[in-house]
Length: 134
Image 1: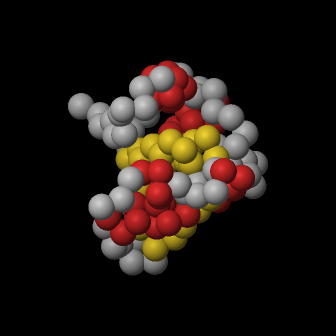
Image 2 (image 1 turned 90 degrees about the horizontal axis):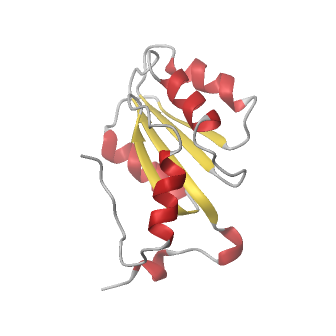
Image 3 (image 1 turned 45 degrees about the horizontal axis):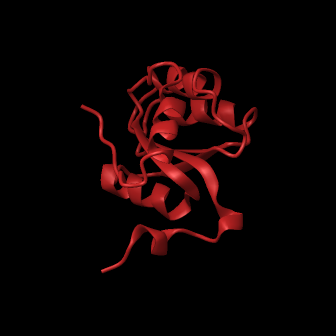
């Protein structure tokens, strides 16, 4: 048995927020999602955003690469073959350093400022470890 505190990295290595996005052929959605995260969520500069493109055969990877050039918070992980959501999440969890980790499907668009509100809520409620959407 272990506690969540045992899973945390050293304080100097911790980011406030890590966001993981799992994608399979999301060319119709990923641009709007990344714009939303960059412009409508009030995220700090120490936020990190991981996009896993798993076996994408459309232009999802090219769209994400466009953002790599303009936002150092965004990281692209490419799985040449589609390995599924669990594989993508595992890759995100191995790399992320956030105190708070948000896993967002590539076809979801969060409401404006919902992540900062959720962070504020979680910060004031240490007894809550996981939140899931309805």
